[in-house]
Image (cartoon, rainbow, N blue to C red; front, side, top):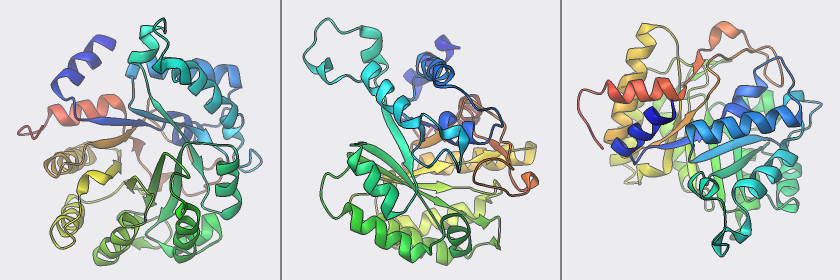
Length: 307
């Protein structure tokens, strides 16, 4: 596997992999891993897949999502092991660690309490969840998307509060609660998110796993033309299922690359098991995580090469 991945990266050096195995992946699996087991999973992911970034868990209370217990301890361990401060000047540092240098993120619920907690813990890279759907945001975070925006803006108004802030925008283009979302509404919401100072990445999240290529193309075209905004700030969190979904996923990946969108969320865990943690929606609504192998396959299946 390592040789295959190395060869793929030489051919496609622009692809950026944001690993969500230890956040989105673990929280959807019934088993609760110990800190020691999570360290083993972490090393396996880094050494096998060498992701650009890795979301190592969440600072949400373990009472809400038990699978996220020990996330902050794991975040500190990962940075101490792979990204120690002395790397810059220490000539004797393990070359393998330097080659595997990865940005570690923690997911932070979009509330004042948790964002202030992230600041006090000196977490440098965070991800925040927002949405296109007001119903979705109110159900799972007890606040409107407008309130979420206000809290994020207030938190980020002081420069350098965090090094990197990734914003997940869920319900592109369907909401598990309210169904299909209007494309123009999606575009307007994304425009607002993209212009919030301090946000370094906006991730289009296919929450229900049934985004249509035509809708995706429409959204990207309008963001790129009407709003004249750099699309390389965008990333994608996709799912897939049957052969039809395979084809749709490939088309979306293809059009993303054509528009200089090179960042993809990937997981080493393929299947999603809902009904656990903080989300309790009919599992039939969802499809599988986009794995490394599935992303590689999709890129190799492109009818032409945009890279």
